[in-house]
Image (cartoon, rainbow, N blue to C red; front, top):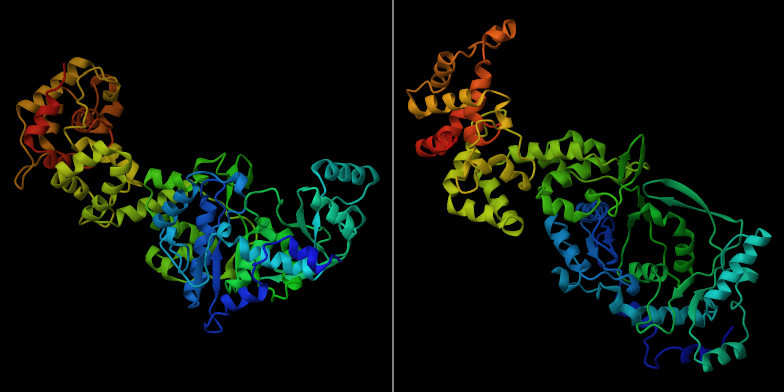
Length: 550
């Protein structure tokens, strides 16, 4: 065991003791049933939709138990820090309403247990690393990359289990004079935890989601403090997690299942530092159907894996949250959206298989949600999205708000079966853009493919006849009769069954004739009720559109 004098020389003379931090962050005063949870993303890339899923679970468990939900930024991996990631985190959390009770001011929060960014807690970690060194439960290691590779090669050659442990841990029991010599030479070193684990020994613990689990005990002397040649001496995730969750008073760690194999090491660290172990709940990752098999949803391979995909597309957060909660607890998917969002999640209802993220189902959920909104509510949501992603559309909507509201009333208000063709705000231009003269592209070619092969001269005749006798919609107007009468005068079958019986006798049926007028007015063969569209556009605009053919 190294002398206290040598150990203390590795740290600043004024470094506080571990006991100091225990006093600085006393136990929380909360009811016994209250849960303190945390979400701790690393700014090494953009926010994954699975992170929103996990953060939402942490938030829900804390809020429904009368506890606290913390946001902690785990940025100890400075080499992989991605510029702009924190800003994207902030935007993502704000979009989904995942506001923390405690966080750093950059995320709009505060709290008595901060700072909540790990790079600002270096002194706290160093105090605890020094404590482990003083107890003989950690040691400095000067092994180079070349030496570590040589160890791994020898282990492979003799069939030994890989890792840095036992006799393979060449600095585990190095004499003090050897350590001093390397320190005097200025050689970089890391600090490793002296694992008490024994190879081949099994350990068990109770996971809140998965029940009793058994693993090989950790035998590796894991690095807990990164290399001394780094500008900011930071710990690895393993030590930072244990120290932070203990000092911040976390009572339940809800995290991704990728950390399952680390539990034995984390339990060893809790024990070595004299901390009570904190219960774990490991969540299965979101999955994607890939051909005949499933795989983890990847934000690198799958656009829908990244939170920006949903924000950029303007998918409302409520249906996304509802859908994710239904993946977490299937019983919630059977409830109406408002009830499902208010109902607490139950960890006992989580499955151990990764839930499948089905974008087609999410589209349907989103369409149902948008259909439940009033026109003004839709416009209120579309405008901020358009300000960021479609500025021309935003200008048009503000310039003619009343036309936008008239358009949104069509087949939506006063019906038990409202239209569901608007699923996200990026659909708005495609679904409703034709209402606005400034962004509608007039249909000027009578041979346009949207006329489905009708002879150009017949298309012109339909347009000209409609314009010549046009009567605007009104209370006493049987509006569609003017299309029907015109179609009959031009030889169209007025009943689809007549055309089907003898197609050579007609140029088409009434549906083909009305489709010409629909395309001229809306630019598509599929649109809301044509009479209501014409009423919303107004007489002058209707005539401008149907007379645009060359």
